[in-house]
Length: 376
Image 1 (cartoon, helix red, strand yellow):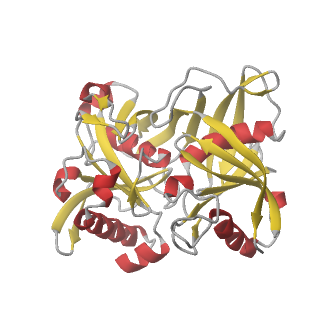
Image 2 (cartoon, rainbow, N blue to C red; image 1 turned 60 degrees about the vertical axis):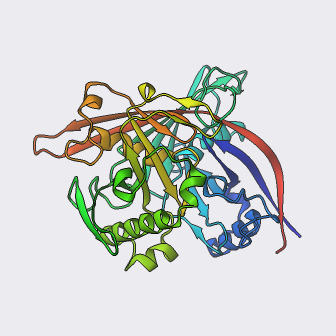
């Protein structure tokens, strides 16, 4: 057996394995084989590894100290694809980003400054800068606090994650097609309106009603509706081709399953979350469900939430809501509750939109550390 140092952490509503780059082989061609064994792939049950059978619990993060000016830490995220011998590095994970700051402090990569340590990150999936503010006490990451996030029991210290200039993370532009609203011709379903944008990660958004849903569905209900899953994947695949990630829909499913994400939405609706708690429409600005690697996410990926919040302020997009233009924050209803995002945007003299930052509050904690064992 071969052992490798590893820390298992929760970041926001995701969890995964965090490695120091120096503890991995210098030859990156060996990394996939290691990460697949760590998670227990290709068995979809992942019994022989650390994986949690859904995309949000199959994250790998590689971290190292940066030599870049004004950057403390660089990191790379790998999305292990459940049931396949595949690791996808095309996109960042915003939730696991919230774990990188506490990890860096706990691993003595960054000095703790009380009461708040601001850590400047560089994400190597998207070549984007992110500032994470981490509460500290007694020279360490402060675990206790009164911050509650939807989808996680209890409270913890508040971590703020601010994605700086997040537009064009993978495509180089906020609107990869040049349009705020696109009409896609979907085989067997006709024309469907979508908004395609790239904020922190590429995202496609469609109305729930246009695919036969009411928008209140919980993940299992979505996942068991094969007809809806098929049309969502056709829409996602068509958008992936337009964005240059795939040659056709089959190629998108096989080789770009994590990029772009696809979500469907309605205006605010009252629904019961995964715990049976009633989530009131008065507490949200939009009601959203997001598909991540073929399955409905139990919350909403943080990078997808970034795009959703921007689209709510983007006049002409499918999600544009003049009400949100009158306030800073956007409250997103999702299967586990409500997430609040704060986009900072401005319109330039030429009419283009600049996204200065998108911020969110998260919590994180170390679950386990030590060595992970693989067969070879």
